[in-house]
Image (tube, rainbow, N blue to C red; front, side):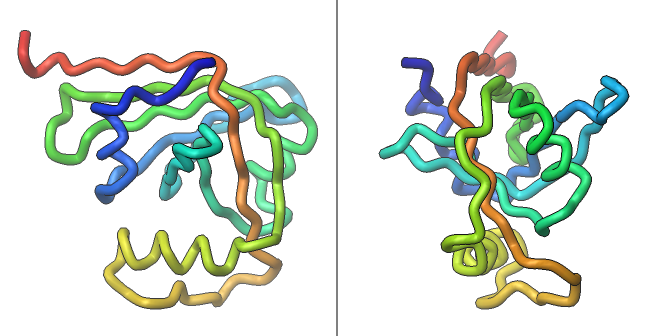
Amino acid sequence: MTTVPDDFRDLFEKQTFAHVATLLPDGTPHSVPVWIDYDPEENLVVFNTVRGSRKEQNLEENCHVAISMTDPDDPYRFLAVRGEVVEITEEGAVEHVDKLAQRYMGVEEYSRDEDGARVVVKIRPNSVTARDESDD
């Protein structure tokens, strides 16, 4: 099973922004920054979005996704994950975005000024590339 290496899991505890790449209906890439999370027990890379967002629509059509992130404390340390979406769910999504808002914004609750329900996108890694080039 492909997993995130233990010595790179700290990226999911920092204010690390990830770029999620999906495919648009015409086959061209769509890449956006997101707050990122990891569930080590289930081995799932997780992010949160609004129901009906472009990335959610893309993933409903094609479950393949690529994610890259750079350590905010060391730009020569990065993690790239390719995988497939195994679930998009509203269950627990509000609690999840509040948890992310605590890490990324230092607030207890995420401001909900957008229309639409929140969803959690869960991705099973098929390929993981982890590099720390700062030691070279």
